[in-house]
Length: 387
Ligand SMILES: NC(=O)c1ccc[n+]([C@@H]2O[C@H](COP(=O)([O-])OP(=O)(O)OC[C@H]3O[C@@H](n4cnc5c(N)ncnc54)[C@H](O)[C@@H]3O)[C@@H](O)[C@H]2O)c1
Image 1 (cartoon, helix red, strand yellow):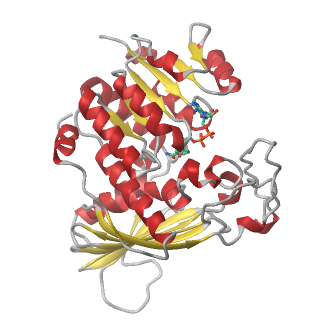
Image 2: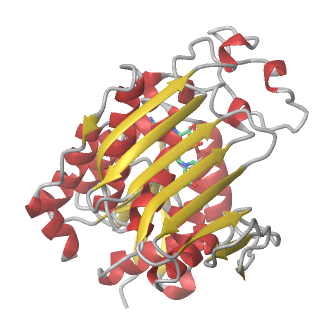
């Protein structure tokens, strides 16, 4: 059996997801890392041994013929450049979400994969989360009839800690947080509803974090996750440039007629995602999105308000990496690199989630102007369907 050899570009932070792949006993080895910082490269060598290849220039990693696949876990604004370079170098790619920060960037990545006949996989780990899978299973079973409407409310209590202190806070690096965070949720809505957005519109505002104390431009931005960073206006060391929104609301019309909405706020007291799917014979809603208290409730009888619904579905609880989703998605990526075939995550779907989030961001910056989402070219869809 040939050993699969992997590299990671952007080895710190989210780059740690690549560690789940390292299973020499199964013929899979993580052997190389590229990063612009020394610290993650030193840590990589310490963890994977002195033979590990580390570099500050990702091109050096891509030049190595002994590497089959790479994780691109660098910040969003590097995904297009590094993903295109990796695919053109013949490597299979695990690209973190969002696939890119523009619609054009996504289409360039898909086209490069098709042209070079290389595999592109996107880190939409929410498709591997227990509560999302359970909601999809319930909808697919017909328990709420034919779905007509989907809503997602996204409460983010760490917005000020994580997204307004570093690169995330600038349009030129993220486009905006509706896209940055919402890429996940738009993808989940598309997946469970079985369609892609064909028309979007949105409103949004920067309503709190522009009023917090800023750091000086010559001090590097550092995320700092502390429960004591409360209330939100007490946050300090915010980015000198903040030109992204901290609350957004987006409407989607899907190509199968389903209507959906997504709302995001970055300064709530508690963090979770609340989804509602309504069909012709009932509705489901999740309470909590991980952990032992997470439950999905189904209402399918007419009557007065019933707190517990008509049926309750407990959701299995795992503690590792986003409720077990991270090891599961990496395992599927490795299988995809080896054997190809269908996967839960989809590069074409990832492009549609960026397309919708990107155009919704353009919409909210133009007072809610509606945008039509262009479809992916047929030859590209067919290439990815047959991998
Ligand atoms: N799927 C998920 O659940 C999930 C969770 C967190 C982050 N993410 C995504 O992962 C990516 C990384 O996020 P993060 O918070 O770890 O970011 P980060 O800013 O911490 O950067 C990650 C690493 O990339 C390195 N890096 C920065 N610029 C680079 C460059 N030009 N070339 C190579 N390396 C570079 C940094 O030094 C760092 O080690 C983002 O795209 C983010 O959206 C996904």
